[in-house]
Image 1 (cartoon, rainbow, N blue to C red):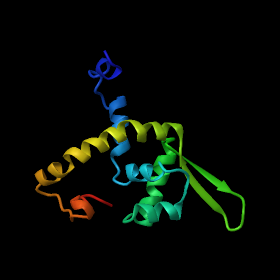
Image 2: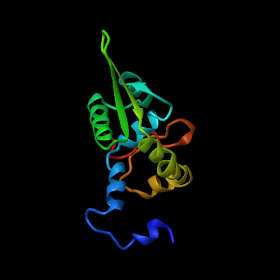
Image 3: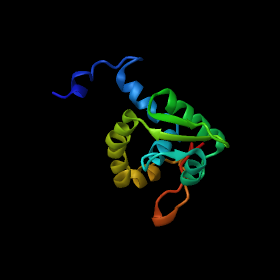
Image 4: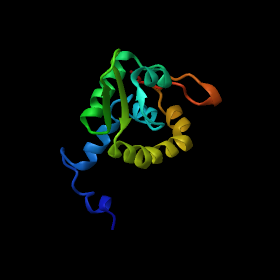
Length: 137
C-alpha cells in the first residue's frame, strides 16, 4: 500500500494533502517554478521568460515560494546589486514529480477541461493551445 493510500482517511483541515494542493492555489506559482527549471534566473529574466505576469504578481509569487522553501534567493554584493533565484532540492522534486505528471495530464486533457467550463475565457495561442485562462492574475 502506498503512503498516499495509507493517509487517504486523514482529510482534515491541516492534512498534508491540503498543504500540497495549496502549492497550486496561486496562478503564477507553478509557472515561476517551471521558469526556474532551466537554472538560476534574475528577476528580469524570469519576467521576460514567463510573459504576461505583472511585476506585483511576480513579487508575490517569489515571496510565497521563498517562504515555502521551494526556491532560494542569492544576493551578490556588487554595484549595482544583483539578485538571482533558483530552485531548492524541494522545489526541484515538486517540479520534476507531481508538476510533471500534472503537465502530462494537461497536455492530454487541457483543451477538454477548458471547453467544458462555460466560464472559461481563453484565446487560442500558438499551436491551437489555450494562451490564457480565466482567473489569471
